[in-house]
Image: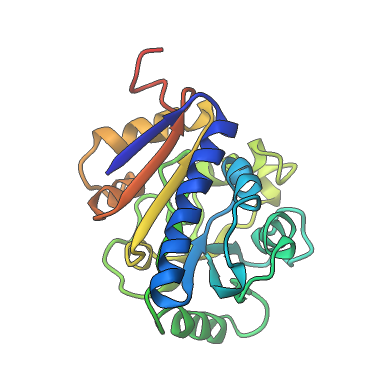
Length: 244
């Protein structure tokens, strides 16, 4: 595990995006293509903004999406698909974007998406960490045993409150109670994992991730088991582990 501490979210986003771009370019040079997984949320804003300025042959990059609320249309302001289209996908010429679609036959949607992600190695995963320590929408206690690629999960209250506090929903009652999420096991299949976790609100989650041994009560502790895990935090999110 490599920990990179920046002064603020902007610096964090710049450092992380340069690292991601270098990894993508290296993979494209070796394999002629690259595959990556993207997370969403306010903690990823600066990384996406900076990544769009990096020189990458995006037409050789295949992108997978981590999670999406069940029952939320892509037109809803809180939709993670809408988020990715507006902040990233629509700004570049991507090879292919595999969104987590939740309309229609959900079992078929999950089966198709799982088949696609397992066709080849996923080179890079941009995996955020939630205030409750979740990765994707795998809230505690996360299912560390399943070997499925995507599953339906129940969202706990802390996770749902995070969405309200970030401004995606007006009230807790507005937040869906279920989502389709990439599993911890599938996340760990990425060759390189990068977690961009700025902001004071994430300080406790960062601390819990770093001080605890592997536990599904803090799902992000799973990431520390990865052979190439890179944690990008800022002074605020690092404030409970390093005196400032």
